[in-house]
Length: 596
Image 1: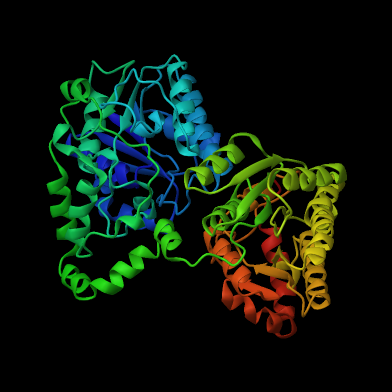
Image 2: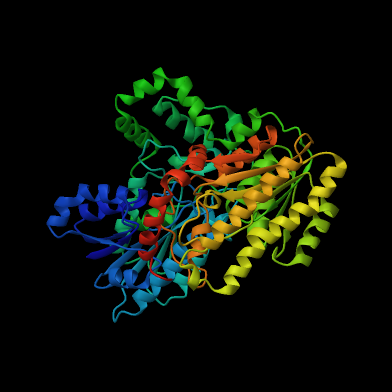
């Protein structure tokens, strides 16, 4: 049988590919062309030479790529998905939900349409997740196929949406909802700290998932069914019972309970009786995974034990829950922070960090709805205080309303984080005026108005801190980002002048000069009318959490300018010394970007 496998070089994809080949199938592998994936392909060069593996690089968002991949196959195993943490693309669904939805939901829609267009549509097996059930620790286990779905994160919402499309597609389909599937890798997922130690969790070995999927394409009995894929009763643990042997095998030992979340997480035990009867896949358990991990570590295990204190410290630094326990509260604990652009990216990360530091946070974004509600719920579950205000900050009356409502629900604003903004890339002459006007109103006018609105009150009360998100582009204006660079130059000058005016007072204005950050900024820029992709958008990009940490540090120790990452501090010498190079390089990069 010829099988299309999407996401072929991720965790589950590799296990499935290996099992499909073992069973004698021919496999067309569809995935993104990344350095990691190209390296993985080398393992299959003999199968490629023998004609048993075909590699097709592409993007699920591009219909032509998907149509080419789906042509001439007998069955499709749709595994590709952007996951909440540590995806093999390096991007997480919860940090860039719009982008993730375009890949996850839009990509699945493209795949369904490509299959429907064929004279004899291939069968489709879709890998879903137990996350669709949401938080179920208050319910008696196990979860069954008939339990209601109650997703609470973007990833799970995307899975539910895909399941609904597949059921309505008219294709021959099967949906497999997977339990916790850990990769055979030495790099631990930061999401490991998001599960409480007393949470029920069911483990399944990644190779058993591959076996289930490979068996599915040959089965006559699974079509039209939704099945639960877990390790079975011998793989049902509390999270502490699962994570402790893994950490022991790595040489790190059990970490303090304070490093782990306390709010219930979306894992549970599953009823896998029917899926095991049909697919016969439960062959391994947690002990097998621990042995595999130990073998993978080899002699390095002894070095981990030798340097255990340093390893444990490095692991604990990745836990926001541990950082919250061990971080001294800010002097402004209990005060009110107003954060704009809070629905995602830097704004959302800053809101979380401020709440963990003990501030009451008011979240403002043009896109309200589910995003802000989820973030407010998350902060409240962690013991913080949060409110949301959906508003279009390009409207003067809306800005006045924001300040009035924030003061009414939380009190006078003590900290203002101006993180709302957007960009556009392309020739200045091609920039539509509505986009230019909206950028000026968002990046400059809204920031200025909100700053002036809170500044007078802060001076009257004798304390406060305003943090404005600037950009290196404000100091290094580049071709393709003329107006954006100009707006950030304004933010830079405005913030610097206010800082100097307020010197010697307890009111502070700080500027964050940002380099590249892993947010939806680049996707939004490319999807603006006449916009283009920004070259090297992921080059040396930092996470929004890194920026948020610097926000907290700046509240503790006020500074006029903070460079993120710090090495961008050399920018003040770049323009005088290398401006000529930017003049020549900019047009080359711009010409290479086709108009959207």
